Image (tube, rainbow, N blue to C red; front, side, top):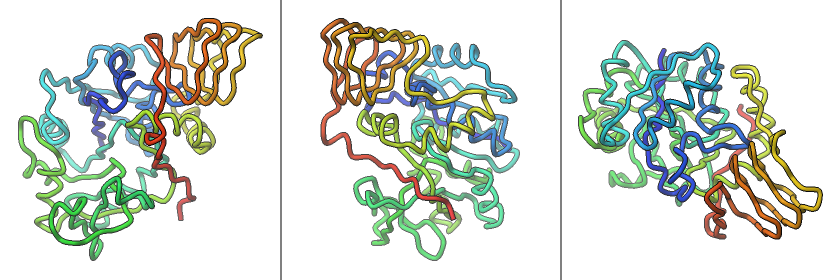
Amino acid sequence: MKAFVLAAGFGTRLRPLTEHLPKPLVPVLNVPGLFYTFALLKRAGITEIICNIHHHAERIRRFIAGSRLPGLEITFSEEPEILGTGGGLKRCEGLLRGGDFLLVNSDIITDIDFAALVRAHRSSGLGGTLCLHETPEACSIGTVGVEGGLVRDFAGKRGTGIHSPYVYTGSAVFSPEIFRHLESGFSSIVDTGFYGLVDGERLGCHLHRGLWQDIGTLGSYLQANLDTPAVGERLGPVLERTLGLRPHRVSPDARIAAGADVADTVVGAGCVIEAGCRVRRSVLLGGTVLESGTELEEAVADPFGATPVRHEERIGTTRTESRE
């Protein structure tokens, strides 16, 4: 089985970080977010991965080419003009039409059991199976309407009146049947592929009860780094086993002066924090330099500057219950 990873987006909600760094490479606990997905795919025995890329495409190519990713075969589908989630997938029909495939967003941190998701899909006999997650924030995120084990609606846009406590995790398994409904050119996979399967009563669901954390906003990104112990505790061993990587708070080559006051903060490779700095609950991306006297609290910083995280952005979507 192959996997298709959506990695072409602009990451507008993560600006200004994504003005200089592609969203899939924004690190969580000093490991690129995309690599968490790669590790889970490899754990599930899925080693052929197709990534669509557009924003900072060449930087993603170079970074992955220079990374040690043992046992993985990465193919890129570069979009000169961005095609959206539907058009991007349609462009790769020739690469994926041979059988069922896994679809994964690149802006989530999760411990979804992809092998279990695949088994659920294959036992259903349906054209697609969405991985859903229960959260009290479903109404603000957008609920998935489920009835009789089938997906019927998304955020009420189909007018069914069916709601649920579930959200779409950004992970799904599809048969080649979905390509009948997709459109070339810019399009949304929800409006084309998902709705096409819904209309034929061919879209099922599988519930994930473990960790699921969106990292698409500065607030949720800060939360994934600072307030979600399961990222390191559960995913750390998976990353180490599959890719030889380990999430960590402070990079060994970071230089923190003896007179700096740093607490509850993630510090990336090559960072320099000079004496007299006070840093609380922040994330410093690799290469960030804080001059003497700098004060940061609940901020995300890169070599180009620091961005405070507003209170309303700190609403998270973390769930860490054990799977049944």
